[in-house]
Length: 108
Length: 115
Image 1 (cartoon, helix red, strand yellow):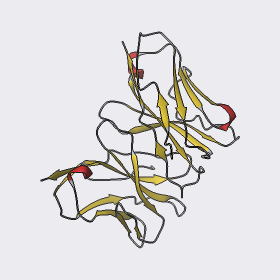
Image 2 (cartoon, rainbow over the protein chains, first blue to last red; image 1 turned 30 degrees about the horizontal axis):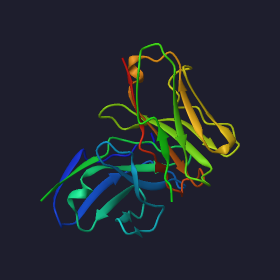
Image 3 (spheres, rainbow over the protein chains, first blue to last red; image 1 turned 180 degrees about the vertical axis):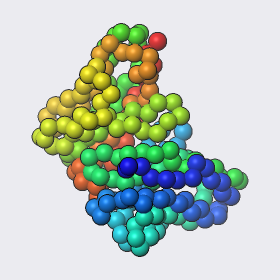
Image 4 (cartoon, rainbow over the protein chains, first blue to last red; image 1 turned 45 degrees about the horizontal axis):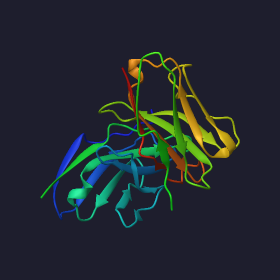
């Protein structure tokens, strides 16, 4: 099964860090781990991706477990604009298989 | 630069009619994907084009659905004899190549409503 497992929802306070977990216990050695987010009434937006090493970009950080069976998306300081559904995806190249995602709510 | 564009943004059609949805990928991207998202659901893969290779049609739900990509750029998704269960947001994405190390860029989608 190519789907990943994420909590249905999480809540955070504005300006605080957020750690969004994802389990992908059956991931193959060549699948990249991608994170996308979807704001209401918009198409998904790429956030970050990685294979084995931890990754940082201007939007977030991605921490990948050594066995690659799980990963965590880190938003260092949540803002109200970060409220969205976050999808953790195993990218096999020919398609993205989306699960239910985590709905992140940010409280002011 | 310009992102992925889709047209129309909204389409309302009567059951049984045919519809065509258009996608303009990012220039230079060789991979193009179609997905659909029903209300409150995650994305469902439909079809994938990579360069001049035969498309991966494994996600198309029935033979009423077809897609083509002309000149390796613009793509059209056609739904024949539309049914109410076809109502969804149809999303197009493109990627530099179809390998797993490249991200996909999504268009804003076409909201299809079949009455």
